[in-house]
Image 1 (cartoon, one colour):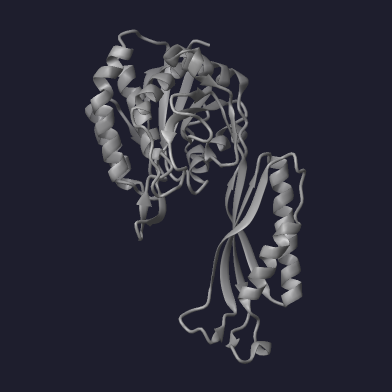
Image 2 (cartoon, rainbow, N blue to C red):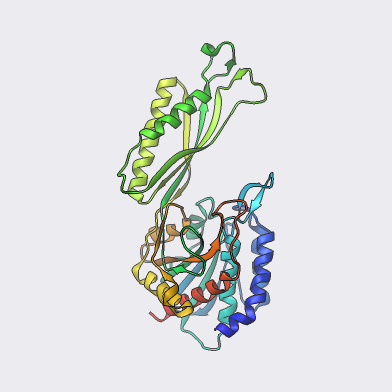
Length: 373
């Protein structure tokens, strides 16, 4: 396998370079889908597009058992060097490279295996809704295992180290609109200042308390009000609230607290506030057998000295919808230590691309080991 990886290394770096240079935001991964389909078709695979969204999947082998490998495809939309654009600052370009690499490596293996390996290229992970869309496609239902992968920042996992499970927390994104009344800046008593309403909400979010032993985070991450004139009190504003919790039940408590805060602000300021949930990602539910298989794959590929304990992180990942929505499915995610700095979602995020080759080996070993269980 290592000899085959050495032969594939230049090709994998070429694939990564292309994907990194052609990011596409969530639900718009059209050219990314086309590129992967053309690449895999040229390698003799038979990729299939999803019926109702961007993305694709491809099967290798036939029959049971059936083991899945999932990668995300979308990029973030953020400001980079003064310009807002799509940007692969979460590592999805690397994740896709590893999934493609696993397929190419399987093609290189002379030995046959019994069963089916399904590699899934999922859109819109950053929206928290891509996994839910793929569940509707029906391609998850007959899988026994599903593995994922995510590059990790250096403060979580040092370069060259790997973990067999990522315990992501639950995350929820709420969007709200304050509908008050504009007024002249000299006559505040004639309007309802949406900025003051927002300030009340921000202050009252601090009154939501949960078990301090369980990590949580709740904050307003966007607030937009007013126009080009500074002598008008804005009556309308839009805002976003980001909620994080390490456990799903605590997330429910936080969400109830936000509703209480918003309802009290409506009464206090005599204003209408509309609030909706735009993303809801569940906390990880890792299967012990899947985690053990991933541990064995890490040791087989890199040695016991490079295996680390599972990571608990406040970040969210919509991969975990698969296990929650399909309880029969055994899932875990590989954590890839690759010298990632300065952090995920930073516009200048970078990591050691050479570690992607090791990720290919680990993931390939994991799916092959799972077929034997």
